[in-house]
Length: 295
Image (tube, rainbow, N blue to C red; front, side):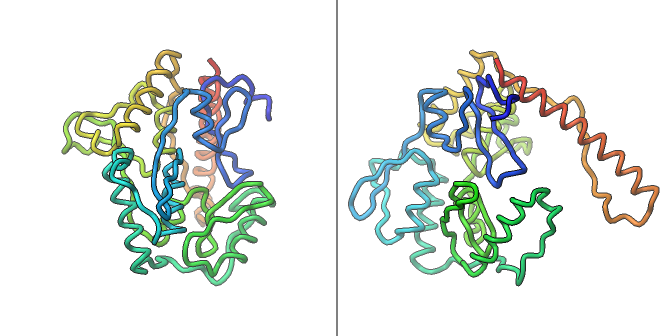
């Protein structure tokens, strides 16, 4: 583990451009499993039950439930006594997915390209480039999300049409044009368009870390969550407040602009230096964010 990641006391999500996955660091440990992370940090986690061939199963991540539906649609069932563990939107997403699989109504929206036409510069890392190229060649004919293991990174991924995803929700997006919706923030007016949202609970959690002081679920937004999810998010937010944690904020917003293919040399140079300014500002911002996770 790099020295800069030592002594982190508030979970910090690492976006490493040298690996095809993201992970959290907390107390000098790396976590790819959110259940383990929040068991250690919060002493709390989510629980989802379902039945498979009449046998009751318990998991702590919604993606595992969805994976069970994809693998065993004929034998999958959520007993009525456990439906309250799921939000209305989550339950509808799962039920509709199961129905479409059984009726063979899922269709690949964007078939695989004939060849892997990316450049090494798209990834900036030869190992990563070779990984995506190998996965494309091996799984370009896969038309339904499939879970595979990579020995290169010792991690599991989901593939479809040669494309690689960290989670099953991303892979399902290739064949199933439905999303789970978690709305939060904005004003108390339901008709106001200032609200934010996420389609993945892990992304939602990261948003809590990024802006805990402003994270809020209004009364009308509670419909997008189950009671256990609301309690979990409340516990997380309360703990961060007790720790007086506040993630760093950007001091200025600078948008990066594409300049690589401009024929106008003057404009090319102007945007080139503009982007240097962006990258330097972003690097300082990321340093401040990391520092804020060391309480």
